[in-house]
Length: 198
Length: 232
Image (cartoon, rainbow over all chains, first blue to last red; front, side):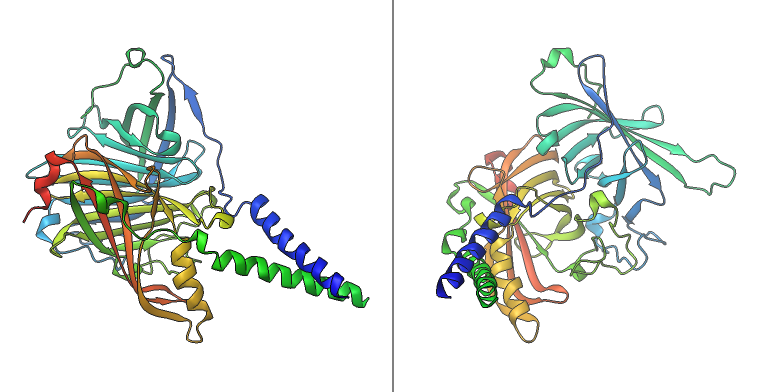
């Protein structure tokens, strides 16, 4: 009887340790990346945000209808020229693959700042600095830093507002398109022509 | 039959023993000393409240312990972001004055290994300090000690809560010394590459609603050219 109990105990200990070793505690859901290879050896990926459906937050001083309802944007003079937005981020199949923040600030010391952070849970994050002045109806910027999958990359990112011009569309509906063009830092930089950015 | 029952009882006991060993294993406790405490550089300190209700917004899948704030905020229920938390919060400097605003995205890491005392998350902070600059802080966080010393005791407590005084560093990487990496963006932080850690100071936690009184602190190591920022 005691032998059965001790054997059971050993089995129990081994079972728990084996389960903890082999069964992943975290198993993130992944969407297949939709990447196209560009002629210069880099790759390109298109993301977008459907507005207003994917907008999690928009905060700015003096805003009459902040999103989400009930949010209290801080009444600080320091943030007078700041506009902060949070979105869900979609791939070109219109599937949500991450979250993103966009900060636009008119700062007396820094000038105009427009920056994106894209966070794709299973892949990593992208930190991009955009040009202050829009060009051709959008902005271009450069990858300042990336984490994990994006850690060894350099390249460009562009943003463009595409208004929904369908007959039933209301004002302010459309999508923000983000196109990334990244190349590995292992590739000779001379082979990758970067667009002018900030 | 009684041998089979004894064997099953042994298996259950063994499972509890294994979990107990794992939980009380002193080898999985991390040092609480900040790796940046031995740095010669000056440091930028940014404080924030880690309580969801104190943030400008906090959101998750809506089914987690910590409820999104405000109530009507869009929830992250889609499969690929279901485990992700997003928070926008005010940041305060070392003199407890408003310094700027921070956005934190965090998601559990598939490198989590409970056997090693690792409950890992990948997180990034986007920090905007008006008049100073912007930066991204990239971290791997280990919440093992927080879970073991606060969350589990809160569940054991008959009042479903924990009260005490807990200080700890949650940053565990990706830097070799357990520090996060800082990538400067604009202003005085332009092109900055440095290190940072995030610390938590907890005094109250509820098993039902999560942190009740938890303050966070981000410490950024400033190379000489940025050191003037923290001077009074």
